[in-house]
Image 1: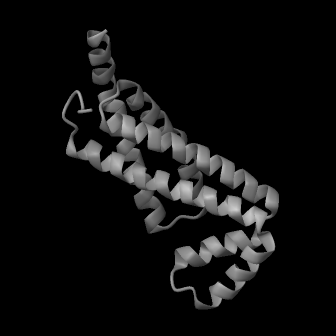
Image 2 (image 1 turned 90 degrees about the horizontal axis):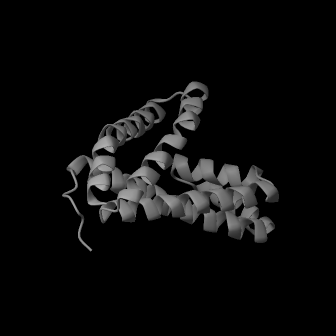
Length: 157
């Protein structure tokens, strides 16, 4: 399948960024699912590994696993799996020029903006602000292009 129209570089970058997010969320979903089934082993491993953890992200993720109860891990597994799968479907559909994927992608990008604003207010940092600005830019670009995509969809029908 080839795209109906040539994708802009900005749209390709947005798709790639969200595809990486989808992969990350699916990995988190699988990890959280494993964690609640083997809760004691994972928390022991995490506590041991934290002594040699080199990266802040790994350290913070392991801290979260240690302090999460089983119900939280189940919820994280389900929600991150669903959102990751939807982002992956939208990214693939958009890459191949499916007009339905554009609306799904726009909605999935926009739905997390309030969460990112909350995070920016309560845990302000340069990286949080940069991530928010990138996602806001992607959302703005998609929103700007939406009428043209809808118009071309109506013309094809």
